[in-house]
Length: 526
Image 1 (cartoon, helix red, strand yellow):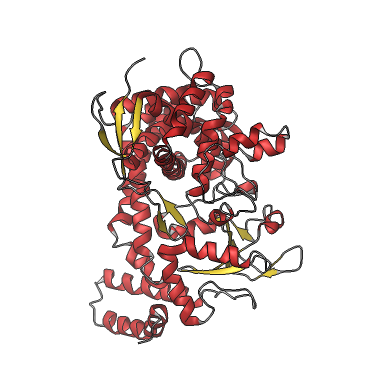
Image 2 (image 1 turned 180 degrees about the vertical axis):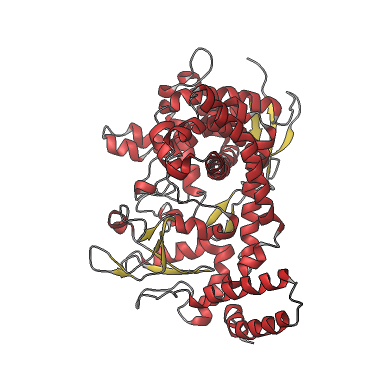
């Protein structure tokens, strides 16, 4: 046997197929299950061996070494040490054109210099595929994660962002209820240990559901549970599937419990959404929520209520777990830098309405909170690589460089965020640096780039161009509202001797530590 598991599998596959044929021929003619298995295996084997292979551009450095043995070793390293590999590639090659390959389980990803963003940001999706990278990351062919429908991004851009101030008023009501029902009970005298990521995820699930479908959906316990479980099962199922070679993933998916559970979550989504859609169709009621906007914007196959329910569940993954991750990282950083907390509380006092809520103008004026959020994101973005695309045919850039077909490209966003040419003393956490930047200039463009929701070549956490995260404006206000409610009502800190939890690397994902806790104590009423 060689040192390459994929090569060993490829060499054994024809013999395995021969053995399967011999085995199937010994079955009775009524053994339909065995025959179906043989057909499935044959098709997946054919698909694997007939699939196009990646071509590397000569002269582009490969992190960890370009030999076959080195690349195999680096692909495995990428699973748990991708941050260091990407930083090595970015800083070593930044002066030599900026291109480099980083080996990963999906192949050698080509990291691009940001100067090519303008070339690619409006490229046709059938040539420079944005959705395909998400489907690959989460094994979407088997988990159903990812959708090529444009219904939800159209709706978020056209309706949610337009009606965001009204939505946030309702969301702030939901936050109060969530803390009363979900947050662990704390006294004013003793500190209580709180499993932060789990608690914040449950709160964000409820709060996001308020935006999705109003109080009827946010108070539907079965829907909320399904929306959380859908992401967890899909994520775990995808990680299990990654252990298999491509030609075995389809049969393996039928045996993985988490993947099989996904069908149950779709049924729960339909139970929650279909009656609401039917009632709204009957009465003509159109509340200001995502479900109503999607119902109005749907065309063709999108008008099927089951399709809308399924899209809603897929959106829940993006809206809930990405926001919860960012919110948890922010709270960890506030515990690590407690001197920032009084500044945030004071700022809230200046921008809040008479009833304690934050309006459109107030959210925009929260420069200190916004700055801390952006600095937290700079250190711990959800994705280490953004602007990922699959090049489906040879693609020529403006200077003549050709990206070969079947190449996955991306930009090393977190490494860029640590570039001392862009950020002075990049390894030092400065929660106020972006607030200072906004105060130091009258240039609207510079002020805009300093905002949490900015998507530009120096700040790539939300992507760039037309596929930049359309929900980032809601997510930003949601994180502000949840965090300020926490700080106004609780004191927070780490336990004695505890340091800021390290994020967990899973290939390109950079996740908050789900096992980490903080201490909370109820604040005394003024």
